[in-house]
Image 1: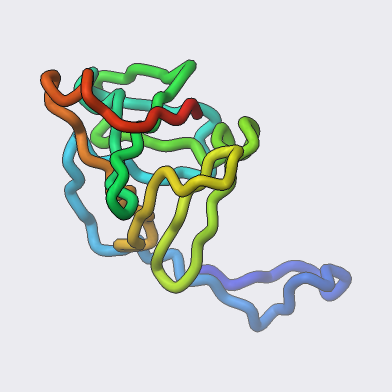
Image 2: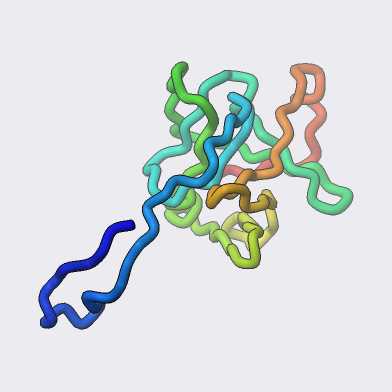
Amino acid sequence: MVENTDSKDDAAFSSTNSVDTKSPKSETYSAYMWLADSATTSHIYAHHEALLPTSQIGDQTVTANLHDVLHVLSLPNNLFSIGCLDAQGGCSISGEGQIELCNSSGDVIALGKQKNHLYELQFTIPTRSKQTSLANETTL
């Protein structure tokens, strides 16, 4: 627990405010898992197979065609930049333990669920044979 000891002049906090700094239960994520990240300035991936994530939205398969993506081999999971999505006209809507990512046309391109304070995007990683037959592509 960290207690705020700022002066009384700081209207945003009082000396009785406290923040629980305990980390959520340590979780292991797959190197193919994509997490929505509002702090990263770029999409970042660890494995080439993860570069064309797809989502099943209703009866449509949607591919997130990512551009200007950083490749970091030692990354334990993939990070989907909410800032990049926003800069390209898309949006993210979150609440009640869920997140929805939309492209600049307002089409839903990914869904996710909150787990241990992180949003796990429900992307699937296509096998090489499926990559040529994906239905819709969205550039992010």
